[in-house]
Image 1: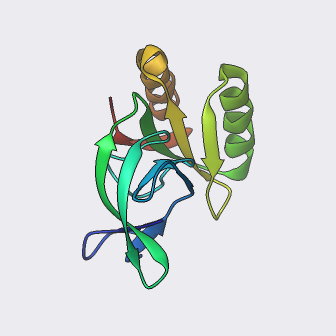
Image 2 (image 1 turned 60 degrees about the vertical axis):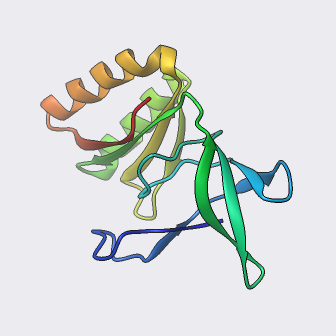
Length: 135
């Protein structure tokens, strides 16, 4: 599924592609973690439309309770350590194109602890992060 991005998006991309699983003819469940799109998260149920054989996002039908953060580590060593910590915490994540950027998803019960964890790492200078979707 393609999700159009706003004009002049900082990524210079015009859309983000997402993996989805069909639920009905026009409804799909998001199965990956967005890197650029705000207000979408894994497990959201979305409505799509067909565009020349491709799926294009229309709206969120039912939002999950998942939040999404985008994190950029300062270097590859820090990224390797961060990846280990994500695994220990049992968080879902995806690694970006340059291996130092991560999209991290968490469910509502873990949101407070994940925010504290990311703030601590940001304060120590190991990474910068942004909140794409918070629920």
